[in-house]
Amino acid sequence: MQDFRDLLKTTDPDVAAALAGEERRQKGGVEMIPSENYTYPEVLALLGSVFTNKYSEGYPGRRYYGGQDFTDAVEELARARACAVFRAGHANVQPLSGSPMNQAVYLGFLKPGDTVLGMELSHGGHLTHGAPASHMGRLFNFVRYKTDPARAGAIDFDALRATALAARPRMVLCGFSSYPRDLDYVAFKAIADEVGALTMADVSHIGGLIAGGVLNNPMDAGFDFMTTTTHKSLRGPRGGMILCKAEHAKKIDSSVFPGLQGGPHMNVVAGVAVTLRIAATPPFRAYAGQVIANAKALAEALLADGIQLITGGTDNHMMVIDTVASFGLDGAEAERVLDAIGITTNKQIVPDDPRPPLKPSGIRLGTPAATTRGMREAEMRELAGLIAEALRHPADEAVLTRLKSACGEICTRFPVPGIG
Ligand SMILES: Cc1ncc(COP(=O)(O)O)c(C=O)c1O
Image 1 (spheres, helix red, strand yellow):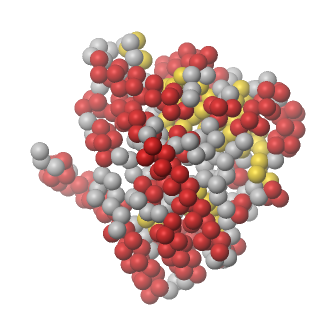
Image 2 (cartoon, helix red, strand yellow):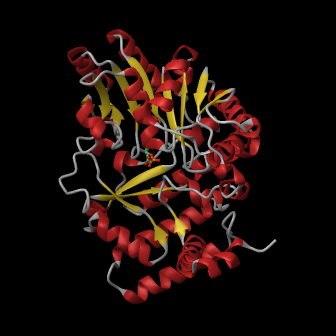
């Protein structure tokens, strides 16, 4: 069969050139943005399969269009596997991505003006957890809790309980996009129960690590809802998923469709089904463990070099370097310097950051993508050395050129799944 790239060169040479460039970029550099990964070749292929042609509004056995034998089959598989992997009573695999997945929970179970406790954005919470810039932040009353620098960045549950008793939230929300520790879901649940609130955990970043059994699972603590994107540590296609107690099944399904969305992307749902089949296997458990082992090796090497990490280390797949304190560079400058040597990271605000979001005090690094390529602790230590040297010589072209070729040499040893 003709490679689709050859066809694309004729149909649209501009997009063909952009695709070739992106493939080169993904192969030739180390991806350290903690929310990114390389999905499985089979899943990449499914995204471009005929499932993309099909409209499937509704749910298996209850669709608004005919011709659903095979779409029903893949959605049933995805739902059943999601429930098994995450030990949940019900799963909805239709959210188009992480943002609508969270919106579907809020809009289905809260009334406008209801109070939700959520983690402060600069302490690691996510925009979709009611940041003032988001529509959800205007629709609901989000009240913030923080981490405690005096306790190595742990959540201050005494303060959180006092806030809950004062605010009487309808929902207690936990989860993060920039926090390098695990969460004590039992402690969140106890506080929520005391004030009669629903519980929701957005585990988008760590869904794969929970599936792999290496981090705590909020469903085991009796949470009402757990949401996760499917494309981060879980290694699936871009999408979102809602796990919940069986008693919330009907309401959550109607909140996703017809409440918020139209037709699900069945090419993605098929990819999610495959991803979850793999997530239940021993090799995936080993992968999840290696993601954390790699993050710890990277963090330890950086710390040993005198570099400051938020909370002093990591227990999950990510870490945040305070680049201002460590190198006198803001996060935007650090991101640009590391880009120049082929290591992709992202600028990141730190707790109570005095600097603006586009020039914040740090950068965020993560290991899921590099681990997927097969890199191990030894490569993490090599990368720590490259990162430290680059950030200490941000304007020395000769040094940066040498580091870029060292980084490129590491990449040649580790092919990217689906590209080679
Ligand atoms: C914790 C968390 N929730 C939700 C989202 C939103 O996901 P998406 O970008 O797919 O809308 C993200 C993505 O960065 C996230 O990290």
